[in-house]
Amino acid sequence: MLCNGLGRYDEALAAATSACQFEDLGFFGWALVELVEAAHRGGQPEAAEAALARLTERTRAADTEWALGTEASSHALLSDDDTAEAPYREATEPLGHCRMALHLARARLLYGEWLRRRNRRLESRTELSAAHEVFSRIGADGFAERARRELLATGETVRKRAAGAVSELTSQEAHIAGLAKEGHTDHEIAAQLFISPCTVEWHLGNVFAKLGVTSRRQLRSALSTPGPRAA
Image 1 (cartoon, rainbow, N blue to C red):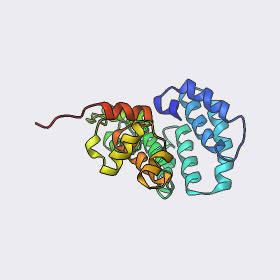
Image 2 (image 1 turned 60 degrees about the vertical axis):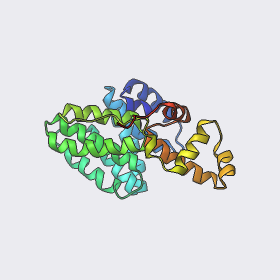
Image 3 (image 1 turned 45 degrees about the vertical axis):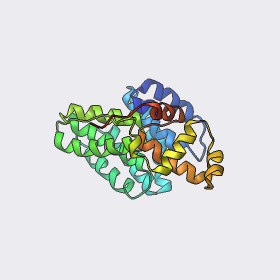
Image 4 (image 1 turned 180 degrees about the vertical axis):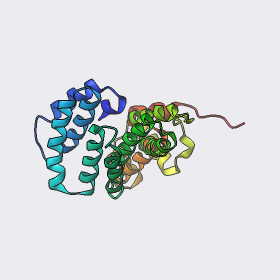
């Protein structure tokens, strides 16, 4: 997923191929999604088609909103330009009804990329902007940058998310972020603040999204960077 987000498709293909060697119940379906995209982008159409066939067996059996939307998006990715639009449109509706915000954003990114290649700039901006907002908010930096580059190619002006927006944090989030920066674990922070570790984890998720970071190491750097001074 990381390498697909960064556009390093050869690495993504190798990683996804390895992940798909074992057909476990938890991550095999997700790994197949990555394999379809990596193989397609990496110029391995036969591997992409084989992965899609295996994915379809599972999505048809599951028949969930996520499964239907993911299958449609993967199918659209491998379709020719004359037939791709219908499955791209089909993908966003079921994914919009489930809680997989990342997968909906990825489907919109793929659709936006396709629209841009078809020179349908205004329509592509709608999809790409929506995808970029979600990726930026949840800290999926690789995908956010990919969406940003696509938006720039349409002529849209897009600013990178500021990594030092400490002023956006609530007092509780700032307190928890400061303790995390000092190296305290979720359990230690929870004990100090008389809250549950799950609550700490939830607050840190908000902190990461607001600061545009994805790890505690990045958090330390973000909190150490002075923000812009008021005029």
